[in-house]
Image (cartoon, rainbow, N blue to C red):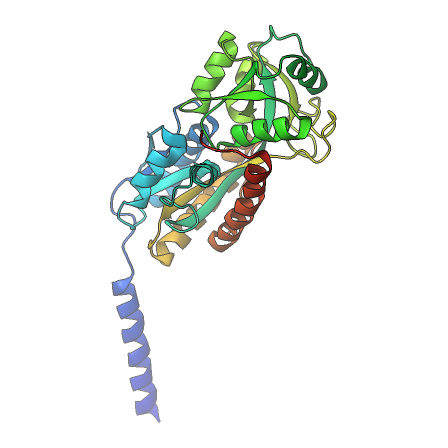
Length: 322
């Protein structure tokens, strides 16, 4: 009996040793985190908030790279085609998914060509206008837009972005004729609103709040169903005469499809540690960002739910790439 126990124990040790030997080594070099938008936008800001602490946890530097254009599809393609070893990641939003729906493309597909790693944050948007625009509430803005059908422009960081979805939802629910002006990122769009070239836009709070505080933008509403604790004085779109209006942006980390589960689990765990750090949470909270707390599997399910939700917005608003 002792002999059999010794053999069984030896087999277990051998199996465990083989598993350890086969487990992929990670990380063995710096990790690249690609952002599909220009510097200064919310996605870029969140990536740069997380990169230092994630690098500390991994023991390798995490380098944020901006590859703006095509509503984040350029960055998405680069990551989707990269080696699935955890060393190339994508900090993304729902934009990659919704822009694909709008344009009818099949690659890269957020639900097929990537594996979900970690939800980083969720946040409502705020409707901001150039201070010279003679409106201080969403109701006044709607009235002005109705008096100028087809003349009111709104800026966004590109087709399919959360601000784009918000603008189209506003046009649909308020029965307005608005003109969408897409940029290569949220930051360039904000610059044109501040300059007065574009009168308004829905913006991620993270990117626009500094300009609001400096008096260069005026915020008139937010897109959550309830007011953000960071901006309790700003009414929701639902309170402003559009019941049921809700758009919540999400930001998360993805890896190429085929990335080993062990690496995905490691990244999810290390990102969770970063998001739990008091200094990181303080920075997130100060910008109305709700840190993510999902496992990789839960984030996968969340993305599928968002695909259904935003797909309905696209269909109802008849959004096309033209």
